[in-house]
Image 1 (cartoon, rainbow, N blue to C red):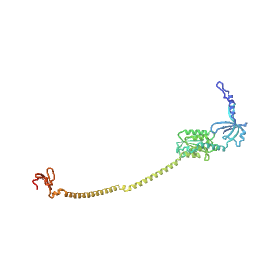
Image 2 (cartoon, helix red, strand yellow):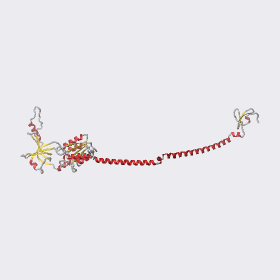
Image 3 (cartoon, rainbow, N blue to C red):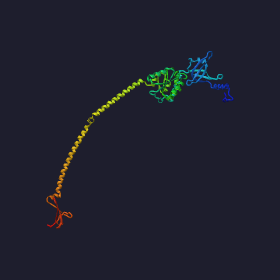
Image 4 (cartoon, rainbow, N blue to C red):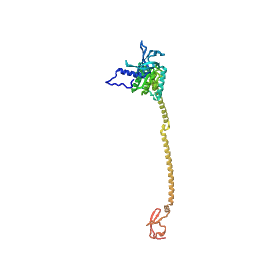
Length: 408
């Protein structure tokens, strides 16, 4: 093989034989390799010792042609059948005349159940370490979904189990059904495509992936890494209903809810209308009983309040207060009367004392007050009123005018 790429142009194209020879040379330099896949087709042609097989990738729609001596197949402990998973030691071959690529095998090793389970267990640990199975990433299922997406096999019993039981529980439930291959080479691709389609539908509120029971090999698509990651990335809650109770594909771990059977899935996605009606009636009866009890308690409290004297005879308190006010008024009157009488007596005695000390009392006894008329000065000494001084004399009954005519 040359280390320089083939130089071509529209004016100088390379012949087909040249390109085919170069391809054959490049491919043959790859050397022997180990390849794993699933036997999709096995053909033994009469009169030849060569067996033709089609080896398919279980995770993608890709296949290769494989040839091997019939003695290699005959040496296997159990006959090889289509659908078996194998590990092949082969050398790539490019046939120049036909322009086809195939693998020439010299050794085949069937992948046993133990190997499959070991690989599934290894994948389980890897995905679990990434957190794809964590509980906190799971979505809760809606109580009553408007539409349910169902991914199942074509005309399968799983479809009838889910649909019939769900409608028996809630007759108004609506389904969007996608029938796909649930085993074989195309199962992963078809289930993943249906899941993506339903997840993109805004009216679908929950998706059920259902399949009946089967062997470990039949359920391998539901432990496929591509499908597991697609379910983990879905925004819509996914319910896994694969196989029977004993079956446990990795889909059960990544799904938001694992149902042991398709029938259990129907019970998980919609409520039982009759049960909900019973619960509603029970709740209604409890509410009525609670309301009646509350009303009775309030009525008893109201009757207790009405029986109290302040409400039974509202005027009793006012009458008592009126009696108290009248009593206080009488006491005030008596007190005031006593005070007035006492003050009157004190005033009378005071007036008597004042009268006794008053000059008028002296005048009543015959005395008189003599004052000069001019300046009103009281005359206490005869020398203060010479002869001819006009005087004013006050007696008990009034005043008199006088004049001094002589001194005595």
